[in-house]
Length: 93
Length: 456
Image (tube, chains in turn yellow, orange):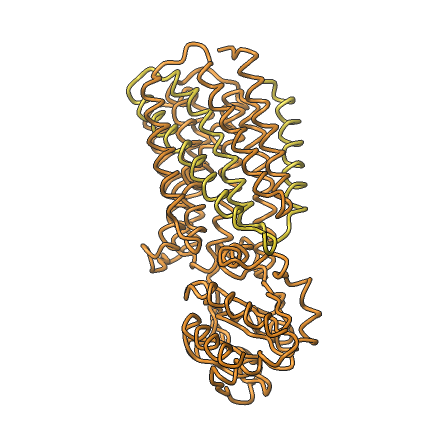
């Protein structure tokens, strides 16, 4: 990928991250940390591509772990975040 | 390898939904919808990846997805709310490990890459590996598997040397492309050990900030490996999380009045307070405490981690409902670092059924303590220590505190007479208008409930 283009993406994504957190109330910090933890679970997509191209047994083993770890990051991150956020209710509803 | 446009498009939609989802989490009302939206983004991104042409090892891939995904799904469903911080830590560490593993394969393939690509692959691998082992230690400490704090002699020197060696090996990999297997393996071993050694001496109380820092690390690692793989969805998701996590880490550290470098490199100093504490601790019985609150017009409850450890939040909410039936206005005041992560206490109270519009953070409620008849402090200590305002010699000087000492009466439910985790004595416990209710939070709240029912 074009290096400069990637630099622009890095910059804009960093600003987006800052903006999103800046407006979040303290009560949501733990679920949000957990939610952002879920989002970087997208690493599983990269791991799948890499495993899909693995040729040697060593690469296959490492790739297998990469996909398993990434999938655990995504699935676990989703479940705990959803459970926490499901508890926030206004009174009597 | 060229990725077809429909896969690219699906990844784009995934990245878009992640950002929408995270934005939705900025308000309690839309927060749950936010995570569901982000979840759809993840499903779309993963499903589309199967359409990448020429993928091999599909059986292995599905097996890995099922093992990793199902294992984490089940453990995530079962974990208790009080144990949530360490679960976040371990899932986060896995993401870091995945990013490091991706880099490892890229190095092993030894394809000719541009210098920028190799640099980012190395940096991503280093921070991903540190996040992986560091998060495992954080999990072990909070889970109680590892309850000792290991501190090497000249810890900071060891840290510095290890970090330098890791960076030097990384530079060697960039210069000597394609790197030899020995160099690659050495680099990963040093990086993994670095994560272990840096995290081992950090105490459990500081761990939330460290988990948040590693969360940001994993995000950056994913973003950098995304560049290596030429996948903008990984770059965007990773960097957004990296930036958000960095800010969140700063907010947490600020709330504890500790700098991040302080947490990483200095142990918490348990020095005594410089100010003389006058007065004695005065005990109160549960029945008197119940009466004080029953006939008050306004009560502010300050819950601390001690309440969560005692699993008293359900009893405390039951007590709150009884007080409200008796016409008492009850509010919860949450210090930013109450619990083990910012907002952790809110989750624990939410689990017990406390509606979030009764829960107030420091800035919102501090002015109201002067109008409160009773401030009830349950298992909290340092966050209500007035010496943070006045005593420059105190290690917690400057930390924002809840002004519970300004209430007409203060009742403190506490297991014993010991100091807080900072080791600092609390002058509030000796104040004339303070009363100590000794005991574990759950049975004490239970006793108060019995007395309140008898008074109704």
